[in-house]
Image (cartoon, rainbow, N blue to C red; front, side):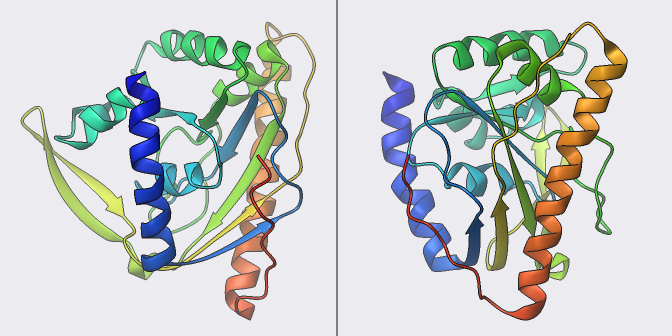
Length: 230
């Protein structure tokens, strides 16, 4: 009940913010399918989870580094919204919770890089969590590619358990996203080589979508957005 209330409160706030503060250019290759799905995206800034979540017209659950749950105010919001902390050394707990959500038909958001993208641009090597979720649940994977001007990123310090953590916040300016077609993967999740292969395939699609987002930003806002069908 609390999760739904937080979603109903926060969604219009995030939507208003993205429309007023971001020059958001979103291109859809295909609308989100109904039912369980795994949205995957690259991760240039700390604020990406909120902007990616704003693409959906329904409640989503994001796998997020546990450190953000310890940031004052933000952490309390994340907990009450039902998002899933990923604890270093205990990824299984996050995976199990995500699988329960997918079995209920929910939407999960994962950032396969497992950390923020390189500060100078580009992408990190993918971790295997998204691939394992896809293989274990059978849910389709939706690649999302983000591109933004790195010179507009703001580095903001937060005190977390007595230590200074530096976040990369994007508060205003152009922000492009491209949403790809659903991908479905089948196979043995115990085959580690195959899981790594699926992880690389997922990241390849994300990078392709990010390059499309970059291309539009270089050319100017020409993308056509589709209405939220689900």
